[in-house]
Length: 81
Image 1 (tube, rainbow, N blue to C red):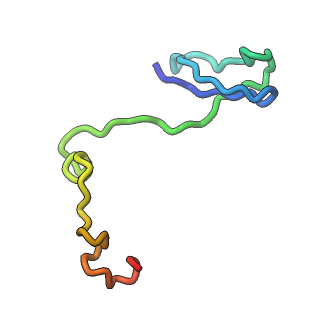
Image 2: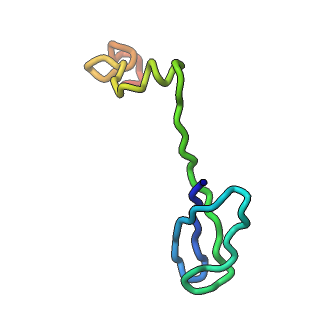
């Protein structure tokens, strides 16, 4: 079940609620009872699986940039100033 973030416009309380996707949004703030309790837009969590670019390029956290930190390898590309 997804976790949804809510915030009350009246009292400012912010809480997370575990709800089914089919559940109706919570209508009233659990702290003050105000109907101004709104579901917030948050970043979704996801996991990339398989043998694609993520697993081969970024999974181990190693950087492909040279020791000098320049992606062009020389530092003379103009964007690495």
